[in-house]
Amino acid sequence: MKNRTLKEVFGIQPKKKKVKQVDSAQLKTLILREIRSVMLEDADPKAVDAERFPLPLSQVAADKDKAMQLTSSGKDDVDGGNSDDVIKVGGASFSVSDLKPSQSSMNIEKALSMALGMIRDDKAGGDLGAFISNDKHIMDGHHRWVATAMVDPSAKIGGYGVEFPAEKLIPVLNALTVGRFGVTSGKPATGGFDQFKEGPIRDQLDVYLQNGAYQMDPEVVQQTIEKFTGEAGEAAVGAAVDKFVKNLGAVKFDLPGGAPSREDMPVIDEPDVPDAVAALSAGEVDVNEPYGWEEDEKSVAARAAKSADPAGPKKEAQHVDGDLVLERWRKLAGLLNG
Image (tube, rainbow, N blue to C red):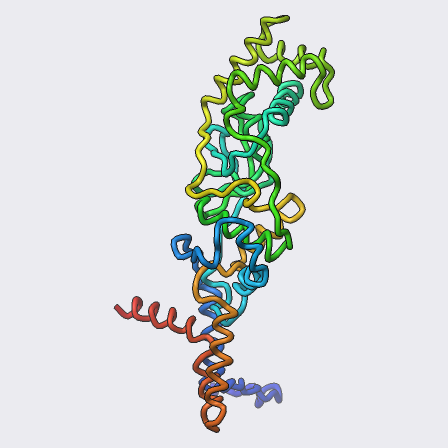
């Protein structure tokens, strides 16, 4: 039986599929788009430029415009469309004894009050709502951390784990503090690690037993330390101090290398933390070369230099845009062909 066409049987004429024609510039754009979608690279902490990302907040605040550029240009196509600036951030939980501070500024008055509240409510630990570096330094929430250590160093502390070491994360967060959230001064320092020893802890506990602590009458403070120690009366006081000191021995009061004082540390409070998480995760902070605004300036300058040549501007435009990403493509192609 003779095969018949659709037109012969049903009177239908199949439509011919049109093949879309693309020129070299359009093909290049398609390739770039695909590369950016599959070649996301994690930011390299070793490649963070200390001159562009200084540690102290005050030094970042001295050049607010630069901070604004650094915290927005990472998403520009001209620097690779954030493909080299992604810093992984995700929810994380650690035993408090595994974590370390990033600042020495904490005061025993606030920490002991929080510790007593945790004992009373059976709620040691909790979520800091703050960043934690991959070398286990907390960027904020120090009083909750040390209060938890006083009560139960095995208790869990939550926060946002960041795949960056503290020494490099601090300047990145300082850039966000100034450039994205407009904060140009840090919080005041209130005391050092020397407060978390037997003498200062005993003195502060005596104050609370006489005058009460936050939302706790003196009687409640006494009941709380008796609950904590299993002792009664005056014996509970000494036992509580001993237990606080012993528990604090399970944590390390080690600061990151070169950590600035509290006044020069990042200030990213709870309402702004989700925005900061999104910016780091999306590669919007321009932490590694190339830097978006500088590449854009180079592109503009190069095109201006070619403007006298009728063939120059078009050729230059095709060459400069995305060249850095294409270089990555060439390197990848070399690996694939090797």
